[in-house]
Length: 381
Image (cartoon, rainbow, N blue to C red; front, side):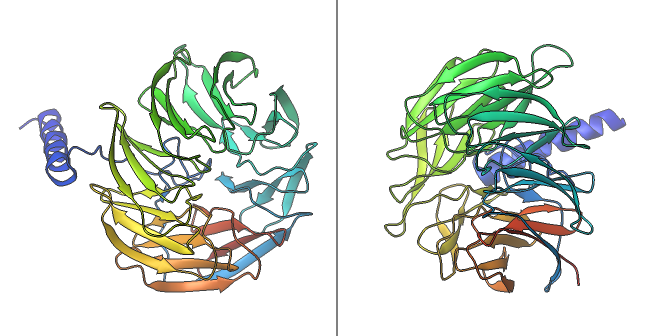
């Protein structure tokens, strides 16, 4: 058999296997070694190639001037993260030493996106900033009508060689901007605040907001493809895998939508606590935190519970799956390493103040922020 035919047969077998095992659920894209944006990739699936031992050590910490809710990006050995002190920082991943800082005029809760030598990040001063990744110099900024809390995302534009940046604002609008110049390509207007990062896959972007709707938008021109009634406002970001979107909302449910059929495939409801955490999605599981102080793991096919891990504080932090383990923070002041198989605690570290920031994982390191104003880095002892 020729090599090309052999590869084609393997791909066909994998596709059939996915249909049989996951009911047609699309296979996941391979995660990157870097962590260039919120949740690690444009589909926001929260997966890392890294694997960790049973015990980790704190390698360094960096003090900012305010609480850190921003989740870091890690690219080329540098950590990029925002703080409530209105600044964006570039730190050395190995040592935690500061390379540069950039001052905005508002709190920076947005998670940075690093793409082609630029750092894109929003601020409560209503601007989206494009900074030089090496120097922190301003390349351009774009003014929206209100604060930007969610991290930006990106997509390859229909024009060869060009890339577009997507960012939602509290002015109810999703903006699509030219990555090089900041020029607007299109704007889509929803009917309430947009909190999270828009997910991107297969020519569409998906996001929710305080209008309690899941919006499915064409990336070509910003036109509406579909919208779904989620039943309550959405504070987190969706994960998008093929035609399926996974997201939780304020009225205590976590949902899976079929974007092609326009239906809700399954819903998970445990106790009367909302979900602000964004999910991690593996080949057969979905993991998400809740304000019920738990990390939940359910079957990807039907939302059936597999296990729960109890903390002593709400879990707004979004979990990251790394091999056979899961990393997540809690408002009880701990960062946890949990077994993916059974939800048992493997390791934990007491920071002491709430950990609402979501972990960023790259090159054998875990980077996370805390309400104590510090950025922490953990790795092999």
